Image 1 (tube, helix red, strand yellow):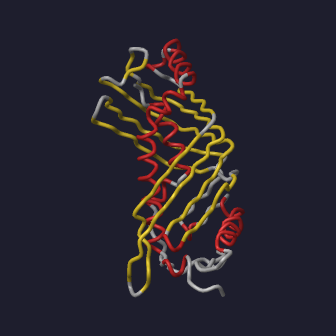
Image 2 (spheres, one colour; image 1 turned 135 degrees about the vertical axis):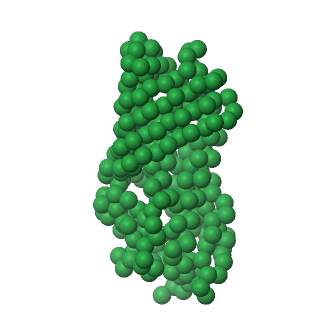
Image 3 (cartoon, rainbow, N blue to C red; image 1 turned 120 degrees about the vertical axis):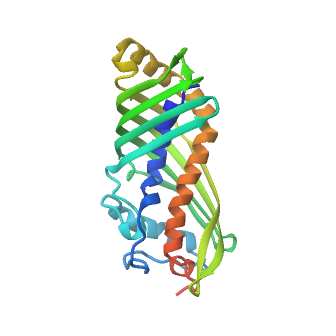
Length: 264
């Protein structure tokens, strides 16, 4: 079964989770920015405060918040992403360059729930429309075939996703560092649903228009079946991306700074 459709979706979802956080350097400043509204973990209005704090950051998302490792959102630009798999039924080698994503900042917060007693954090977001464009190079060989053909191409890629809802659950564990309490995330769970996908790959099969049109048509007609087949792969990759991102944040700021005790 071909994986290129899944990689396009995975790439876009991964970018939504700020995949470029992974390589970001920690800031020299270790105190939280003054514009961030801090909530107290034992407040009865904790979840309300958390949502208000997040909503107050929305205007800054367009240009990014480097103090919190959040890049500019509109558009979100990633220089390069590689996807390789050299085991199992499919040998896959792909590179995506000059990745640009639009629509990330226009999302709805469905749920934002903090449970300090369990060190649990739950966030659910819905993105009405996300659009991705990039230059791509891909080769799938061995048994990785669709319509009896190995997939290969080198050109321009466009992906449109509609009504993507992602629910993320993080569970942490406290530890001491330099006399302060910090959090390490032990469990990351990501679930996602979406209502529609459209993908177009230019210059498939060395520019063979007939084969390229057939492949694009096949991918778009069968996206639901393909999505379910690759869901475990994408879920695992999203968990890995998100874990790397939040580990960077939680290792830079103490738990007592991010969510202090006390109501005042």
